[in-house]
Length: 136
Image 1: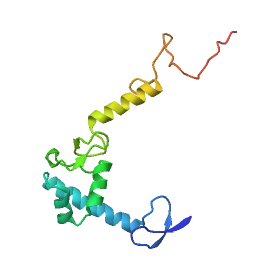
Image 2 (image 1 turned 60 degrees about the vertical axis):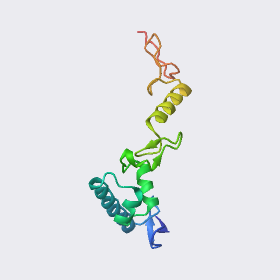
Image 3 (image 1 turned 180 degrees about the vertical axis):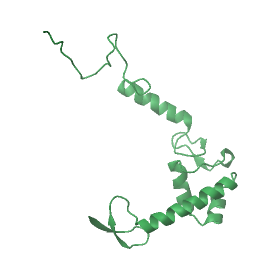
Image 4 (image 1 turned 60 degrees about the horizontal axis):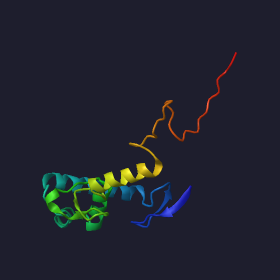
């Protein structure tokens, strides 16, 4: 098992996947719950107000918003779509840009709604599966 220093507290710990130790993960989760509860009670709060009230950094709150773990009130307008700069409440992209990206991916791979089109024989086009009729 690989040993590593925690990115937060610098303590040596057996690293499996995360670059932070279990103690720091627990503290971060507790802070997240504090922020989430504050935001639940104060829906119109700005990121700065949330940060001041909970002690969570602006960067950490923004990260949780981008991950979709938190959601702001639309009237906040602090979070912008990374594609078109429209106001969003959570995540990285607005619904319009997500739809456009999904359609572009469908066009690129010849899929419709994530599934390959089916030909007249009921087989997905581009399917690599072949069967042989067994004669007895």
